[in-house]
Image 1 (tube, rainbow, N blue to C red):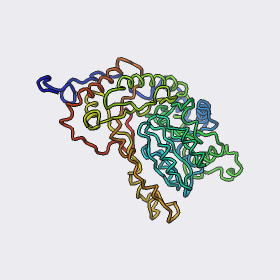
Image 2: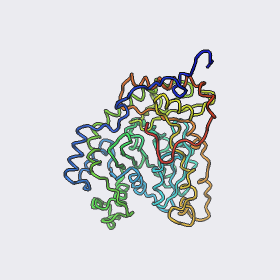
Image 3: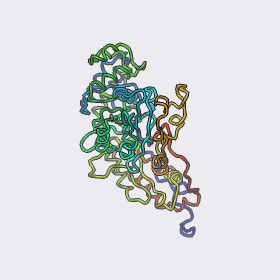
Image 4: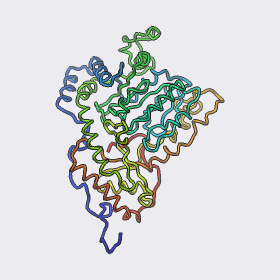
Amino acid sequence: MSTTAKAKSELALLGGPKTIDFDPGDMFTWPIVTKEHEEAVLAMLRAGQMSNWDVTEQFEKAYAKALGRKYALACNNGTSAIQCALYGLGVGAGDEVICPGMTFWASIAQVYPLRATPVFAEIDRETLCIDPDDLERCITPRTKAVVVVHYAGYPADMDRIMAIAEKHNIKVMEDCSHSHGAMYKGRETGTIGHAAGLSCMSGKSFAIGEGGIMFTDDQRVYERALLLGHYERTGNIQLEDLKPYVGLPAGGYKFRIHQLSSAMGLVQLKHYPAQMAEIAKAMNLFCDLIEGLPGVKPVRPAKGSGLTKGGWYHPLAHYDAGQLEGLSIQRFCEALSAEGLGSHPGCNRPLHTHPLFVDMQVFGEGRPTRVANLPEGIDTSHLNRRLPIAEEINNRVFSIPWFKHHRPEVIGRYAQAVRKVVENHRDLLAGDQNRRTATGDFSTAFRR
């Protein structure tokens, strides 16, 4: 920009007018709580039945029916639901469980109390989900299962993953905590693998306050999961070899969900399809408006691919600094935030770089917990691999707004903010050091 052409930059970060100079109202309010939700929760509260499981069983049956799965088991959170699913699938001492290197920790950390070993695989640069080719490279004779994370609501390549799993006789557990309602070629995520686990905490797309739920079509998987941490309900176990163990939780866990969340969930099952459709309409409009801008590409399935993103949890866009003359993603997001858009660089940092999955002795085993239950003297080189895409991805994606309503005029203003920063990016170069420090976070993913 020539100093004679303009006295100052148009960018709010550099003194110009702010694009989002209005109150967006309830555009980002979530969950959307109706009178029906309130009445259901208050009825449960007043009855003092928060610790029973009659409404929970109703919620499980209704959700399983909606999803088309035989069994559902509600838990106190998504972390517990995933642990139940993995235990149900038979994961135990000495087993290896493959997981994408870049995801939230609750996709995989639960293998430690199951005395198994996490193995991290590379992610696909476009989808941010596990790379099927690298998944196959990670398989050893000790591999029991793979956790497939539909990251940021983008369905993973389930056709290839299921074929690889069948070839090597390993189990597939879908982590659908980001993908409630997402579709993969006519099937909803969570209905394709041998089991699925997902979170329903208040920040997720299918939000019921706090809680999680697992699904399976396999009776043994379900009853093993029930036995692990649901002692009061083990009377439902029918398999003869499991019956001797009913009455006490096999893992010493208490994974019961409180029924305020179950009551909320029953109502939300009725409202979520319409809410999800509204979100998808709003998000696709925003993505259409910024699609084609230099350096920016929304993370979403291609139109006509047969894939959808459901509730669009944790929406992201790819960032290509090379198309914006090397402008760092940090500086780019600072400019977006100054315009009122509230963007953050990165997503979750790669788990294989955290000490928990490198050298920490969680239970005082005398060697890192990650290898503590593997046989001595085996080749563990597959546990110490570089994952270049996962390690770099936080400099290549940024968060975009998660709209809950289709209001074109408001959405258009947010898209205008992105366009404004892109078109005036040269103004940001002088104050940029082309930073490429670690972004994202091990523990959280940004909600907006």
